[in-house]
Length: 295
Ligand code: NAD
Image (cartoon, rainbow, N blue to C red; front, side, top):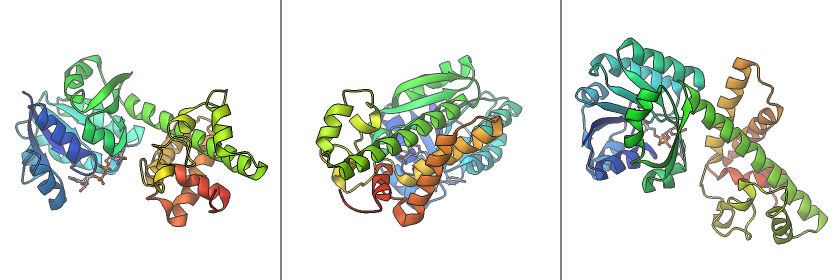
């Protein structure tokens, strides 16, 4: 049993910490929101009075926070309070630059670190079926992997510091672009008098095949489990897709990578959010492309 501190008990962190308890680990946690701590306490998570108190006896610290600025400020606060040699893991989705800074902060305090963002959403967090994309040394990965495996199903070592975040934003840039492509095809099909099912039956087994079409089809009918069949309730909210596309653009600008379709996708999801649709599933962008009409 490993002694683990968990900071950030929101939609993702709360159930992830609960899964570590189920696996038999001792968890001491902290969140700024009392309601999140109360909910976590019901799953057996021990609650501390502060983040510094939560980490004092930990062998591993996991943070699950909104953005890079939160991670850097929490790590700067807690690192003086952790024991040297503690493994620091951040599973938030943050910019690559902040992730690499966090690794540097940990090293200054004699600690190893992993950036380990996730995909799989709140369902994956509850069901311990997340995919972790992990950046850090081989040694740190070997130490962290057994703990991550209690919260997820696939744990992929992507390379050195920051490479987990790099993998996350590259993957989600593909996803944002491919979803827009699939949505545009359905909107064009509607105008051409081609049924959703006919386009699906052809494209799902042809060169247009992709996850956005076959698993997450943005129109109701062909894939009954997709959010399109449930009034576009997320799933993966458009606001989170916009966040990830902005992180991809920041990274692309920082390293001079040409990502014109990633930039266009960020603009379109920005518009979708400006329409008040940030809480809808990201596949609801089909409505924006239609001009908000129904199928
Ligand atoms: P959330 O807003 O529900 O939870 C974040 C928690 O951090 C909140 O409970 C907040 O009170 C806490 N917090 C903020 N600052 C803090 C501080 N200084 N000290 C202690 N606690 C603090 O967000 P979430 O949906 O759980 O997402 C967490 C991260 O995971 C984000 O980076 C997000 O992009 C990423 N992510 C989310 C999803 C999803 O479907 N929700 C999927 C993949 C990745």
